[in-house]
Length: 375
Image 1 (cartoon, rainbow, N blue to C red):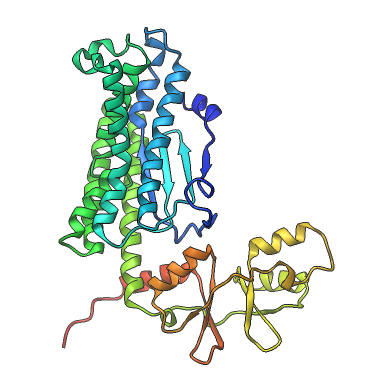
Image 2: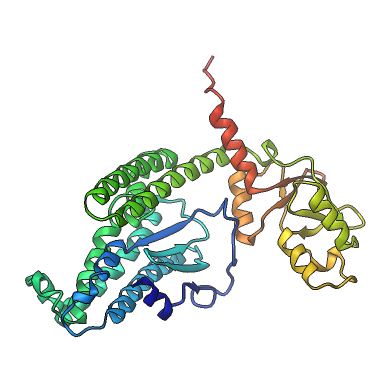
C-alpha cells in the first residue's frame, strides 16, 4: 500500500522555497543527526487490511490521505523549528513514516520539547476537526470503523499517529520529548543516554511482540534500536566536541592545490592520498576555496581540458582557528554545508583541515582511554 502513496506523493519535499529561502541542500551524513521521525507503521499495518473496508472508500485514497497527515505532521515540526531560527532543508517520506531533517537541534530543552510536540499536535488538531466533521462514530462505536467512511477511518489513523509517535523511544517524537524533560535536570549527554536506554527497551518489546504477532514489528524494533543507539553516540560526540578545541584532532598532514592547477593534478592528489577535499590556495598562500571530491567528479564529466581547479572549487568556504571549539566549528560547517573547513593559526596561516571524521576518531580515542583520577 505504501507504493500507492509514493506514486501520489513525492518521496522528498524540498522546503527551501516553503520555509526559508536560504537553506543548505545537503549535510555530511556523519555529522548530520538532527532528524524528527514520524512513525506510521501501525497505520501501515492497518492499511494492509484495507481490502476489508466496507465503506466504499478506495484503499489508495486512505493511503494517500494518511501520508498527507504525515506530511502535515512534519510541517508542524518544520514551522516550530523555524520559530527558533532552525531551518528544515527537506522532508523525506518513507514507507514506514516521514523524516524532517533539521539544520540543528536547539540547545534549550524547552525549545526541543516544543519542536517535538508540534508534530503530534498537528494530528490532534486534524483529529478534532474530523471528530467535529462526523468521525465521532469511530470513537463511540469502534466496530464501525472498517465499515465507516473516509472521515471515521482518518480519525482513527490520526489517533494512532499521535499515540504511537509519543512513545518515549528514539527516533520518534516521544523520545525527544523524554530527553527534553530529562535535560531540565540532567546534562544533555546523560539525558540522551537515559532516553536511548528507554528506546532500546521499547525496541525489545516490539521485537518480542513481532515474534508472537506480526513479523513487521521486528523491522520496527530494529529501526528503533538503531535510532536510539545512534542518538546516544551522537550525544556523546557532541559532549566531546564541547570540551576540545579544533587543534586537538584536526588533520595536520594534508595536501593543498593552487588555483591554476589542472584537474589532472587534482585527480593525482585524490588517488595518491586518502584525502577527499583539498584546500585551494592563492599566490600569497591564503585560502581561496575548497575543491571537493564531488565538485572534481562533476568537472571531469564536462571533459573540458581548459578547466582549472580555481574554476570548479567552492569559494564560499569559511575558516576556523585552532582555538575554535569543535561544537562551534561543526555549526559553521553545517551552516555552509561544507564537507571540510580549513583551519588557520593566529597568523592566518593554513595549518590544518577539519572533517566530521575527526570528531568521530577523537570520540573513539576518548572513550577508549581510562578516566583520569583526580590527584
